[in-house]
Length: 402
Image (cartoon, rainbow, N blue to C red; front, top):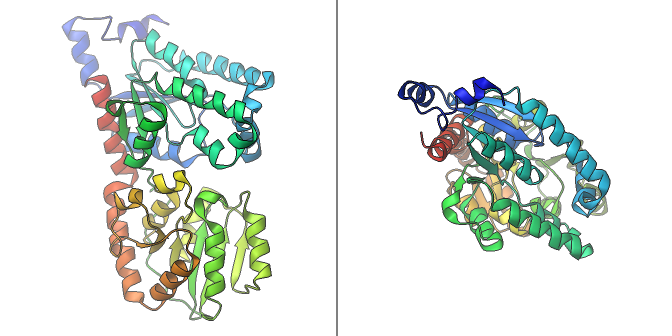
């Protein structure tokens, strides 16, 4: 690396004046790897650090395509020589970009960063800096939940071994809930002292509070914005809508796409649901306006391990727009939110319980307003860009010894 980078390295330059200069300048982080630029987790963490006064320099190379491409890779395509070529081309671009980043205090692998761990380890060791991995979601667990491991057991074993090896490398690992961290410890042997928690949160540069609008037609609008996957339990939502056919004021809107969307639409047609509307996915900047038209936002009701261990970003986004939220109960949700105060919880994969919760909330507008106000206040404390930035900055400063 060039002379400027070596001079700015406190592990090499031990003169008091230079160390004093480095330790008192703002924390500088390199957000590194083939992480997905469009993914909300990366946007929120980067924005959070910048709001906390941390300088973030991005060193990124594209690798991942759309949903179909990622599913194909998880099904075994990552072992194909074509993927190896894609990966090495991305690594070459990363190394080229890294030379232009200047000095930094920590190298953070954004999500997903599993395949970038070997390169990041070399880069961090070369500069004698700490390496941090955002292990937001387990690729092996995603593949297992979607049946890919059952269809390709050998690929599943390889992916599990790769993830275990990758998680043994970083100086610090980021996860979003205590439940997910505990699962990672059991499954991959990650010691708890190397894990720090950073909630998923929502991008408060996009999601802002809006007062609950008075319905102009007397309707109660229930909105789901998200992916149609088993984690989220859209089938349970459709069945709940069927149980509410006798409540003409309750209307449902489903916005998004995913492998279970076609089945959800088929079920709605079969059940003759006339007050259920399906819309295509929206770009992130249009989601807040969609939620602003909701009287109640739906969270997640699946019973997969990942659904139970996480607090989905759709929950944070609805709270950030000051909307009352009903979602499936879980220990993860209860670590940060209180039932009946910040949001409304009901049993998972239980259409009758969800229908009763929606019916009850539709008849108690005062409770909905309280949930919206208290939920937003709690979100500001734990899930805003600013709150996440403060938490992540503290973890990074601890890691680099500042």
